Image 1 (cartoon, protein in one colour):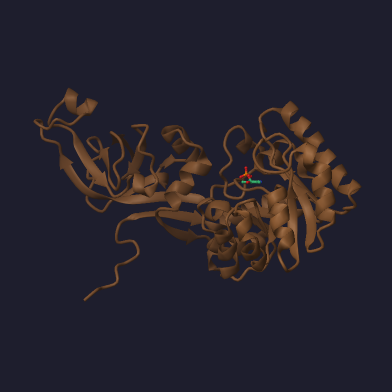
Image 2 (image 1 turned 60 degrees about the vertical axis):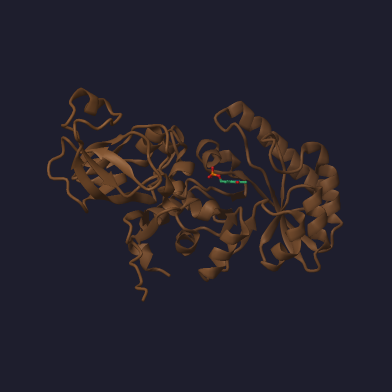
Length: 377
Ligand SMILES: *Cc1c(COP(=O)(O)O)cnc(C)c1O
């Protein structure tokens, strides 16, 4: 006889703040003209915050449309009952052109193979054209622009909505300005081919924050939405972390016997005095295995992580924290009492970019949603 386990039987969970999300969307909307189209980027399951749970909140707070890198995220948006336009970044091979067209998305034409495949689809398809202005990744290179736009013009089934580029080296103003000039040339090439009134989109989060003149008439911020912008950009706007906390609980507390060969400086210095707790959180939950070190919070105090993380467990030093008991809540990221481990501190502790670190953990733990906006569904 099977009994249904509670969803949090193993205590590893993350807390999402939907009010912070709505706030961030409003901050972005306020940076735009009313006619600008605001694509909210929801790739990687909304940067780990959950596309199904966040899409409607973003729409109600001022986003116009969505952008995703995997048709599955598009399906999550539709499954949440949201029918706003969705731009699908280059993410599928040409043999999926029919399937992509069936989803009713704005597909991306990023090279001649995708152009060819989407023009053969037997139904009208809206497309955005991706041009490469210096990233060296996806999109038509400048020498291809005249031919590409001429072919798009001649493809009866394709309706071109706009063109976009993803800028490289955003830390360097000169590199951005050079790519922006090239993007203008792409827009000119489109116009020469007979396209007018296209969306022109070059602004991801850091471009919006550092080069607002490049907002043009459409933008596609991602990390700004979720409050995952790092230094120095984060000081350019009042954005709040959507990942409010990542938590676990204590599974066992013990004093390590003096005779144990445990590889830890404190144990080596004073054998028999090291008191540890094991928490139900490891690299399966997205906490990077290396580098060693880091801290978590328990009983409102900082506890040092001992050694590398294991698959599902992490050992912490609670020698100086009285009263730690089985079941105590442990904070990996977030606040507890007067202490806080911010996402920014976690980034420097685990030496991983925030848009990689936080989604690793939130996508592998139970996500719990908070905030007045959590009531909207
Ligand atoms: C991810 C992505 C964005 C958003 O980038 P952020 O830095 O998260 O704002 C914009 N455009 C493209 C093509 C992307 O892949």
